[in-house]
View (tube, rainbow, N blue to C red):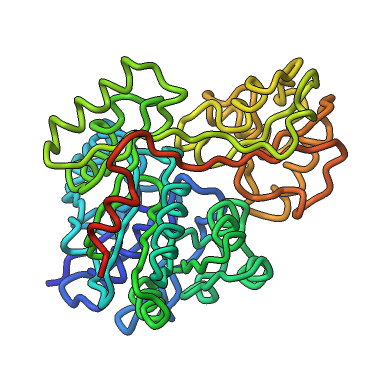
Length: 438
């Protein structure tokens, strides 16, 4: 008899696990997905166009809060946990909830879910969201391009719209954002690639994405989201660790698995971290993966006009996921405000409206910064209103996407970016030339 399955996810790993393991598997009947972490993704269906011949009506997506009820309603035999950037303790609380209802609790492994490529694959993953993976990926693209390699990047999924229109997405120009109706979170990841003249893919069906990308690439770069495992069999696994969050490298899922699998671990942000925490992270890495090459790096800030910060009252906007499920309380924008002499950082909470106001209640780590949330037109308007309501002289945009392109800001603005700068030798260029010189 078939085993009834429920997949717990957040519109990423869950769909991938279904596609590569459950979709055409006669041993299982996937009754439902549940969704969490990201707003506005429940009450949808995984459509039949993606679900395959065994699911002509598609598969319903429910809020994770209904997990216990769904296990009983659908007589679930197996719950497959399929999202990332959560603590080991959190995972086991979910396991306990599932087991108490009589179902098995599964975590699918890398070998069962990673797709093989005909081209060499470099994967860049992280211990936590906001560790510095994106600037690492972009630096690798530059190094390999200078070596004469055609590099195509593939990004971890963020499919928050109509899934049927997002099966394979290819981003080469800014107008592609409108074509695929991208959220701010998606633009944060794709825009820096486009500005450097690179191509990046994303979507829902990562087998189809890979096969299309292979036609225009010498090397595939997997730019992993959250701290998820690669979706592809990798030839060179690079993982970024964050000494601003020591011990997370051995206490978050599946960040610790990434550390244990890594060929190279980059301890980033050493310019901002305490020496004691840098040493702690290094010792933890060496304990679980003594064979990994460990690099250290800084993430220096690039500010387009520091004079607009000095002596000004500023309001700071930061990368949304880094602040929310990444649990950071500041980012590049806040650091720039301090570094370049802002007179004060305006508390945004009194000016917040709608879902932006709700975010401060849901994520207590948020305090003196605005999360760049924009998962719908309505939320984008609420973000605009929150910023424009404030009594600030200058808006510091610390998120990678240029918000000035998306709505009107009624104050002067400063854009903050950051790059990866390795310290010492060997560095990424040395390692990549050694590995991919032919």
